[in-house]
Image 1 (cartoon, one colour):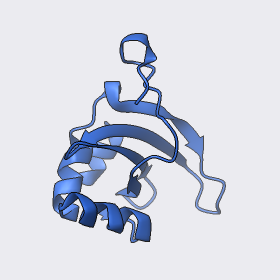
Image 2 (tube, one colour; image 1 turned 90 degrees about the vertical axis):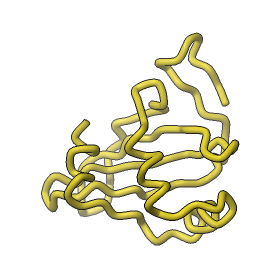
Image 3 (cartoon, one colour; image 1 turned 120 degrees about the vertical axis):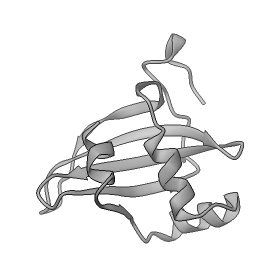
Length: 108
């Protein structure tokens, strides 16, 4: 909820090659990816909070969602110090994702 609140004012999509390649593969824009991200629910939760061990601190939250028929791994951070919602990853997962809040912890 905090991420979604921050994203209303300031949203950043990290300029990472793997994520940008995924957008191109799916044929969607950053704006469309943001809409998918803002549509996440607790059922899309994968894991977190995961401490950010960089000097910036804070925590990451990870989710998964089917976008344009492809399973997508999404890594988010709500940076309250700077008032920004950041998407660090938006790409095809390297491993199956488990969803603890879906019936039976469904894997995809």
